[in-house]
Length: 338
Image (tube, rainbow, N blue to C red):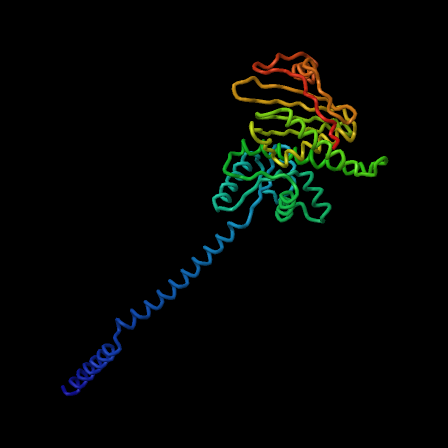
């Protein structure tokens, strides 16, 4: 009996001491403090991570993105010979490309689209020693095109609107580069010692000013067509609006392209020409025309303008006159000399 009592007392004392110890240390407060500290450290890490991600997103918005686009089936088929090119269906590729453009645009940065040309890509890889069957090589080529070639800013427009704009921009860039190379190859004039290409460009720029001055107020659409070497046909288009009380508002790129193509015609004494269409409110559109001769723009007669617009260029068959349009002779211009 005494032994069992002693054991019972010992157990009671042990439990009591354990309870007193726990009560002194405060078991709830100790565990709560530990959990609170852990939550505090976890929260601080989460806030730091959120801050880093926010700064990363802010920096990402300052970095431009360019997507190289394969716009037609033939170009797409040419890229399928590379095993690392992941697509085998052009419409599916275009859907993914449009989805990528939307994602990049949603991130808030500037996104541009460039034309991806498989032949030029292969030449680029050959010249730089890159492996064409590589995502990194395709990316580097796209960056090169974006820095030197034509691009179109993506603003959410569907691909069936973006692609024609990209093709037009690329064709203009190619024409301007080719026309510029022709002018650069002319060298120095044997008679005057001046740079022949620069001299022709200056004359063309003055003729453009004369054209716009003579056209008067309105919305103007000018086209310059010039045959060049090896059967090449150079074409430049310029759109501009001239208020009644101010000079014409020109796009600097279009103006430079137009003057460059016209300069080639002047320098090469090409049989090209210029046509001008002017639209004003509550009046028929007016059509004027000039032909290049001896490095000058010579005004066409009214009959020549009518014939030029109302004849099929491919078949030579007559075309019906356009309703609401007046065919007029070209007005006199200077010869482009200072």
